[in-house]
Length: 199
Image (tube, rainbow, N blue to C red; front, side, top):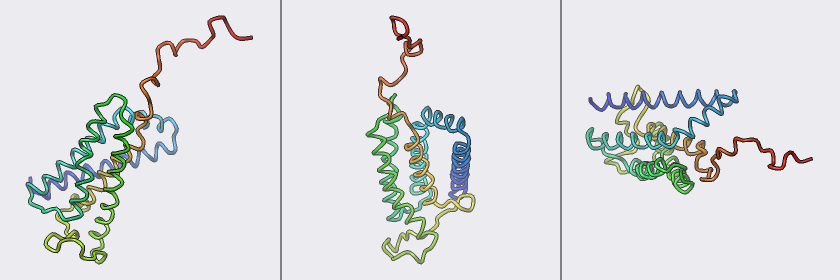
């Protein structure tokens, strides 16, 4: 596969993810049972899904630079500094049964910092006149190496990655539950006191 075909695959995956998340969000906003279903799905699968998104993004990033030969610009490097550690942070978090508030916070910080750089990168890529020449002239930040399915450039794919991971971290409630918060079998029994109902 050449770079255009790989970009189309990543672009199609990104488009499906964006549409799926948007539809789930709309359904959850207008229908309470759907909201609870979405929250439950995120609680059950959000941690591994967030890790998978970060891992795929990291693999794609390395493929574009190492196999396709696209040199990363300066802003790309900063985004890599935010995204690559997410694979480790989210991987450890996914392996913990009850998640980890510290790793969740670390993930959100990395996502936030990455998005700040990423949104500026997307802006100057879309509107090159905004570029002040801060990037290396040999590897300008405004170059569009590929456009998956006619839209998804490498920075735009990074936007989808960071937003998806950020949403998964924000919606997932497993980090807020302690080990003692899970229901005990006895909790399902009647709550009537041993001596009978209180008069």
